[in-house]
Amino acid sequence: MSGQAQLMPAQVDRIQRGALVAAAVGGGASVIGGLINPAQFVRSYLFAYLFWAGIAIGCLCIVMLHHLSGGRWGLVIRRILEAGSRTLVLLPVLFLPVALGARELYVWARPAEVAADEVLRHKSLYLNLPFFLARAAIYFVAWAGAAHLLNKWSLKLDAGPDPRLERRLQGLSGGGLVLMGLTITFSSVDWAMSLNPHWFSTIYGMIFMVGDALSALTLVIVLVALMGEERPLSGVLRPTTVHDLGKLLLAFLMLWAYVHLSQFIITWSGNLPEEITWYVRRFQGGWQLVALLLVVLHFALPFVMLLSRELKRDARLLGAVAAGILFARLLDLFWIVAPDMTGHGLENGFALHWLDLAAPIGVGGVWLAFFTWQLKDRPLIPVGEPEIRELLEGA
Image (tube, rainbow, N blue to C red; front, top):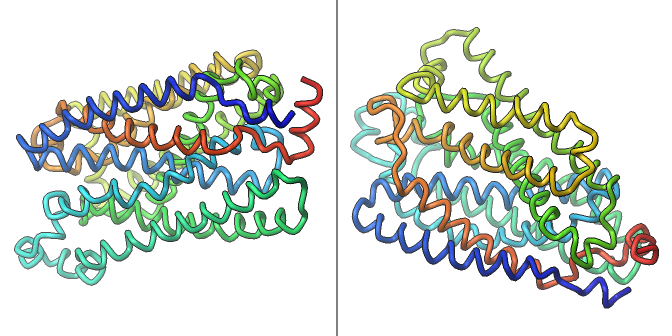
């Protein structure tokens, strides 16, 4: 049984090789683009960074959720989620272009413009570059620290059930989810909402929380679909487990629609100039077509498909739906942040620069290569869990 648990699907090596190619091609193109057009590079890079950082953060959140709720669905994907959470140590390095390009990205980071704007002067106690970087450091330390402890204690459980360790994991996860809620909210305000410092939303952080968890879950389901027919996952993956993952995906999909619709209704019904400009910008100049695509691709179509019980019990079909949602997540994030960046906004209408494609490929290649390296560092399934042992013995 232990030998079977130590196996690593050949798909992991194939994914890693593909990731390295993507990192070289996308990263190389991004570097060239940065030399030609530095301003566009930092804008595209921020979008790419938010997407892949969100997946790492979402992995940590779902691990915590599983430690609190239990369930076989989480046991099967725990090691994948934990590998994703261990990539959080990579985020400070990947954040460097954002930090160095902050004055290009954020109007509040330019002293001359702050001096000429009363609103920016009023917010300067919070929105200033030294405090911005200090807060980012706090987020990285909190996320990496929580991930380290959860991974450390979880690995010790491979030796067998330990009630003391299980209580530690539950306690850390309970407080950790509160911590994640706070840090995700503040980081989304810092890195995304402050692109338009005159606008604000009290539900903005929730949009990023749900989006990060949904992105992480879709990627994990895609990986399960790719690796599910190989050992050791094939020994523990059952239709009921796939069904549970499908139901969880449907729940997060509906929650994503709920928080977006809630923000829209509250903002539109209030009809306040300082609030509705965010939507006015996104419903003109071609951006309204992106919004329509999101309604169809990010909710309506996958929602109808996920109502099928048969689809939710088929790993390959569920993986295909999850891949579609993952692409829609990328489009959703672009719709959220790009209109507030110079060059993408209302003054020019919808615009897609080639760096908006190269940067996510390059950053994603680096992230996935590091992720697969972490994934191969440990057994793919937590063999110390009694339910997993029963499944392996019956395989």
